[in-house]
Picture (cartoon, rainbow, N blue to C red):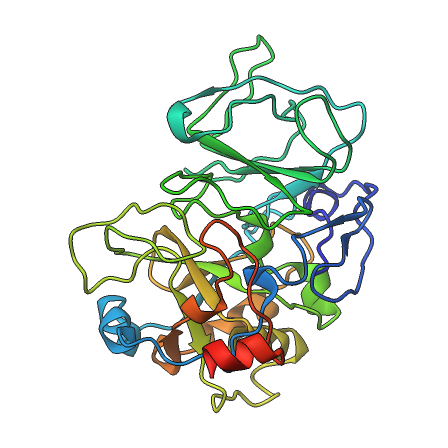
Length: 335
């Protein structure tokens, strides 16, 4: 997948990661020489051939799907310098690492993070900070993804966050079972964002993260954590949904940006990653988004989705590696 840092677009300053970059799944983050996980990672795996989950209809009903349209949770805010969405940054080699105090310390990676006064932090209550470090450090390998929730940087050294997680972007390793991350599902945030550069190049080749108002007290691979209620009608964290292949919108109502997202939802689908408003899906904070590009995506009826059963893709419970369509083992397990 091809993701350029949203910092340059959000604040109008060019960075080493701000150039457009077209790629296939698993290729390099621009300016970093880092992948967003290997190409055979579950985030990067098509789900067009997977069977419908037996719980699909019940889960859809719990999310008010018959009366709800999808909502892109990113785009213009009225302030060009502060668009809606989740920003991220590729850190420079000389970046100072900071120790944080975590509210959920027992499930957080308690190592230094490349968090500084200039690190972009998501607006709103979640205050996510996403940082990619291309360089090897004493405490982490090259191409490490650092993500924090409820993030507050203090120059005095008392920086805090609700939780924090670190991934090696060259690895398919998941977090320990039962561990949260900066997301309720224990998943990374960055791989699931709609990114302007990817959409512009028609190369949005990975699953997208989204939220639901209720989730049950369980999780499905590749999620590692639940934050739900004792209502089994609600979907579990990690549940994956696919847009029906037959659903279309005319080009007059859904231009190329919109059509690219539709194709992605049909091919890679959505992964339930957090609690929130039903059928809100997230993207990067980028001042290049236009109201038209965002508003056209509000025409997608949630009832046009089905939950799929992706359990056959799992190679190991502790790995994000997925069986790939077209291989003999996929045909034997998923057909």
